[in-house]
Amino acid sequence: MKRRQWDTRTASDNQGAVRSEAHRRRRVWTWAIIVGLAALVAIAGRAPTAWAQEELFVTNGATNSITVYARAANGNTIPLRVIQGAATGLANPAGIFVDVVNNELVVVNSFTNSITVYSRTASGNTAPLRTLQGAATGLNVPIGVFVDVLNNELIVASVNGFSIRVFPRAASGDTAPIRTLEGVATGLSGPYGVVVDTLNNELLISNISSNSVTVYPRIASGNTAPMRTLQGAATGLNSPRNVALDLSHDELVVTNFTTPSITVYPRTASGNTAPLRTIEGVNTGLSGPRGAVLDVINNALVVPNFSNSSVTVYARTASGNTAPLRTLQGNDTGLVQPHFAAVTTAGAPLASVALNNLAFVTGQTLMYQATLTPGVTPTQVDIYLGCLLPDFATFLSLVQASPGVITVAVGPSPVPFLSNVTLIHTIVQFNYTFGGFEPAGTYFPYAGIAVAGSNPFLPANQLSLAVQPFQFTP
Image (tube, rainbow, N blue to C red; front, side, top):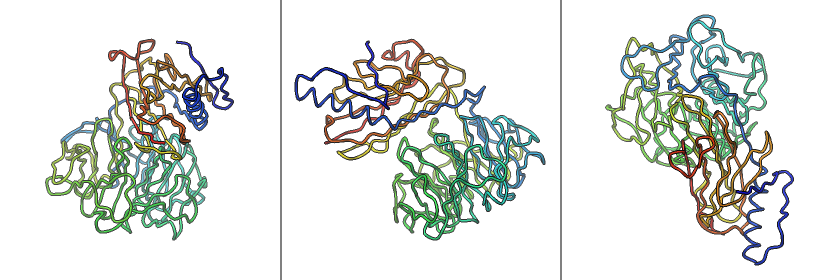
């Protein structure tokens, strides 16, 4: 098909005069959403050599070690590799984050107020690639960590410092944070777990001293009050140790150390809100759960248990007094008072789409985020990003014309965002505010990965396809 493109920075509608008011309004709508794409951001990390392995990483505070297993390890299984020894700089390692874009393993050391970074495949008595440590960092018993690859930032929660400190992702040495969130108004009280919601531009913190989850704008700093606080007897929060987000299902997951339990809420829950579901009881195997992680690809919840030195795994939707799907535990595992866990997944390439809402009206802003994840082996693909309009016949396709330049193609068939490329971990976002002149109905934002050079409409060519519809009412 003939492709029509606009540079989002200098877009202009050069079509001829419309022949009817209906056509004019349709073209105004097309122009408006194209202009809205000016906020589009695309990130593609350097292709890692072999990051796509199904692995489970666990920090062990008592032995100053990181043990790594096959993702589905069960029973008394020996680790695939162990990071341990004087050269590693590990000292009561707590929070852990696997940065699959940069192929790095980021670890918090609460005893030495430091962040150490290793190659993802590091093993043995290996020195870190870099260490963030010193008076200027302001770290005070750091526990939780999150790497925001979209904004290239490192976020750390200090439980004793009652603060959240944000650094450049690759910060090292005695580097001061680029911003700090702390003060009485923040409501921070023993901040432990931290997660960044890049879709909704929010920062979520679990606070062990006040049994709460506080939420802020992503770039909040200083003595800023939270946007909302989840707290109260009905919440079931009891020394909450970690917080995780499931953007696909718009849910918030919290581990509670003292109860012990896992509580799940709507993502935007606030006040004294009861959980949607709770995993709790003797059959669960929970025993001092700490840094749980969501494995969204395998629909699983992975929980390290500090008190009985185990890792238990549940179905994402598990509730009640439910036994785990599997339990990693025993002398051969090397698990000793595990703190946090991280999971990498692999298999077929995966495309996913998340939206900030499923229904919009005039004046509201749609926020779209597509995530593309490579599979086990390097794959040449075509990437499709965009939206099928309510007429069920017109595709609005996002196209990367060159690095930093995004164009748009409108027509009866989708046009690739990128063609014949080796798939790497990629995140694409855009925002659009509805003006009220757009056609009402159901829209179908999509992200797809197809065999390079193939017809994307044929199911056999679709390596992965994600669609997240929403409704618009003027």
